[in-house]
Image (cartoon, rainbow over all chains, first blue to last red; front, top):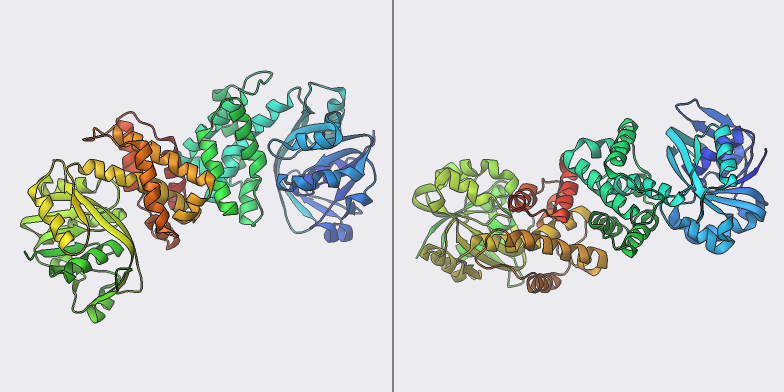
Length: 306
Length: 306
């Protein structure tokens, strides 16, 4: 089954998944900014431990009005650009267009649902280590699995169809019944590692090698799990085993620089609302105060706007 | 009454108090490192809102063995140099020499007492805004009051004598009965402001101007007061009024850079053990866990040694 797929927000995530889907035979169009000249002239280059590959004649535009309708819109925008999201997605919407946001944190599906209706919206979390290289190049460093599901409702046939699209493209993808749980599980990793690495300039393995920061990672994860389990998940997250699993997942990543560390090093804004602000609000609404997460948020924000 | 006073550790604090005592007619000798050439050639210059002054023919040495016995040794060493403290003080010790440490944090009196006997040791906290300028110059920015007392016991006549020495030199000084309480009260200011400013690069007024960091300052102060009140003080610290007083004290300081922020900006080590490590241990010994202070310590330490 061939789908018209529009990639909106072509950072490392959008470029990588778009390239994988295109290589698998899907009709993929990219909305590009920084990489437009390079990709339209020379195509898109992917370096990966699974084998580098190059795509010629990649369809890309600088203006989403020129993209045409899509069957599936894959949103990979940085969340600090969410104020532009509806405007960028609008021209792509046909009768049956589905939007899948793979952005970080919480609050993204809500923005899309408010504009286009909840029934159009799916969300997912991506476990991807990738960076942008030179314009026209994306560096896949490892992993890449996706867990996706419907926004505001349980399992659907459609989620299975989209998941098989990714699996057919060589991207491990699972359709989940409880997207809220998947999003919070991802936050258990993102909240400590993104913030601590951005603040200290230390990669994940150095944060884990130093006992005081390792302890902070553990304790912050436990706080996030406490907030998650107050959200009425289909099944609670077991703190001990889940934290152990997060450490097992992180250790082989080596000298990994989380996206927020790279954002800070490169002078971009940080995704603070999606990863800290909204989760803190969701926790507070359930009467859960996250002391360490709030402090981390304050310190990160202090580096941003003052 | 003329006293032979030796200044050991001539950073901004040692230079400023030494200069004030010398100007008041005391016999003051400075142990200098960075400022030795400048001070021996051109004397010591003090800029101050209370009026600049210059001292010619300042007695200074580079080696404490050349200082001779003192009646009073004033220690202003950075606490990360405490491993050199006993060696530096030893040649100054006569029959009745008293040592007064005005260093930051906890654990300094203990080092001196272990080497020279508790009866020789007094401690004090200094509320001084001062920086070193060019070699031979110290910039007094404001304040300067000292609260001092005996180590490990209550009030003494001697504490009153030393206090009047400072008062006669134009330095407001109070002898206190409970040095432990005075040290912890100082930590209520030092623990949030030193750490948060070093970590974020924000001066005190910017930390207070931004609601999330202002909230952190307040909550960290409350944690420190909880630990202080577990130490069996002569009288507990009242959190609400004391925190309000700390804010009143800090706001007029304006764009102030706490010493730890300057240490980090200038690439020096931070006084982490005295201001964070030992207070956290003292709290833990009383069963008090300081969540925010521990996180701040971990983040500061992460910037130091990894």
